[in-house]
Length: 483
Image (cartoon, rainbow, N blue to C red; front, side, top):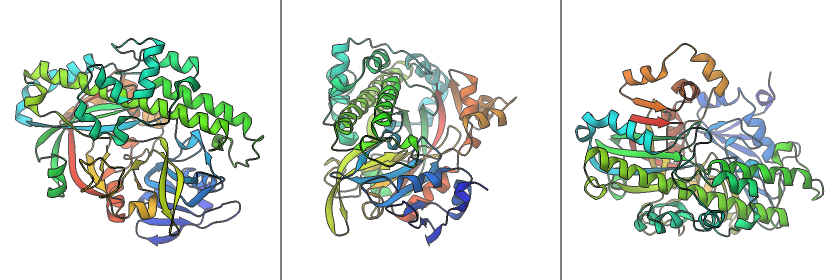
C-alpha cells in the first residue's frame, strides 16, 4: 500500500475531491478528477505531493491539482498553488525545469484537400526546417548581448528581428513578455546553453502537429477564435530549452542550501523555496521571467519557420492561407496576480506547474481581442489522440485561481512506456490511423506512445463540467514532428 492510498479523499462533487487538512497542512488539498481518473491518480505519489505543498508557508485557500496530474519534482505535475505575496514563498519545484513550456495554435483557411497530396512533404520539410531532439541547435546564433535582449523582450525580440508579425503579440499570454526580468541573475552556464537553441523544438513531449478541426462545440466562441470545422491547424508545444532547465537547476541549489537559514520547514527537499520578499526569492522570479521570455521568443520563431515552410511546400503565402496565431498559453510558471480570497482581493504568487491559465470573459489580463469572450485554452492530447480548444470558464477564478489542466497527463513513465512498446513500430501504427509522424529517435515515439497518457477526452470533460474551462473545438492530428 502506497502513502497516497492512505490519504482520505472527501467527495465534494462528481469532479472534485478534497483532502482534509491534517498534520502540518495549512490548507486542504483539492483534486479535480472523475472517479475513474482519481483511481489512477492514487497509484502514484502525486496526492502526497498535494499534501506536501499544502504545508508551505503563505499558501492560501487550497493546494490544487488538475485531472491530468501525475508525480513530478516537488509539486505534482498538474499542481496549482497560490502564496501570499507578503508572507509566502516561491519554489522552482512549483514551476518545473522547463520554464514556460507552453502551447500555441495557428489556424488556417486550408482544408484537408488543400494539403492531402503534400502532407508527407510538408511534415518532412517541417522536420528539416525546425531542429528537434535533445540539445538540438537552431539557425539563429546569438551573442551574449543579443541573448540578454531576448531574455528582456521575449516574443517582441523575435518580431522586431523579422521572425513573426506584430499582430501576434495580442494573441500571446502577457503579450509575450513577463516583467520584471533581469538577465544579470542568469548564470553563465544558463546563458551558454541558450545561445544556439532559439527556434528549436526540443525533445520529450514537445511537438509540432498539423491537425483538422473535427468538431465545434460552441459556434459563437469558435467564430471569435476564427476556428472553422474541417479547417487545418498547426499546434506548437515547446519551452525554454536548456536555458530554462539551467535556471531552475541553479536556483534549486541556491534555495536548497539557504532554506534552513530562512527558517522554512519543508516536508520534501524537492520543495526547496524562498520567501518571495527575500533576495534569492526575488532573484529567482527575475530569472524565471527571463526564461519565460526566451520560451515565447522560441515559439514565435518556430511559428515563423512554420509559415515559411507551408509557403514553400504549398506555394501559397501565409496571408492567402490565413495562417494566423489564435493564442499562445503558458504552462510551468509562477505569476504575481490579484485574486479574491475570502471576500478580499489579495496579491499572490500563483504557481501553475503543468497547468494552464484560464481567465473568463471580462478579465483585465486578457487582451482586448478576446476580453469579451474569455481566454483561449489549448489542451493537447498525445500524438495519436485529439486535442482541444477551450475558453476560460466561469468557475476558474472562484475555485482554481483562474487555472485549468494543460494536457492528457502521463500514466506510464518513459521507461515503462518504452518497455510496453518493445518490438512495436509506433510510427507505422500511427500511420495506419492516418497520422504521419517523424521523430529524431525511435525511443521518443515509444516514450510518447498514446497508451503512456490518460484519456484526454475524459480529462477535458472534467474541467468542462467543473466550469474551469469550456469546450470550443476538437482537433484530430494528421501530421506530427517530435524530438
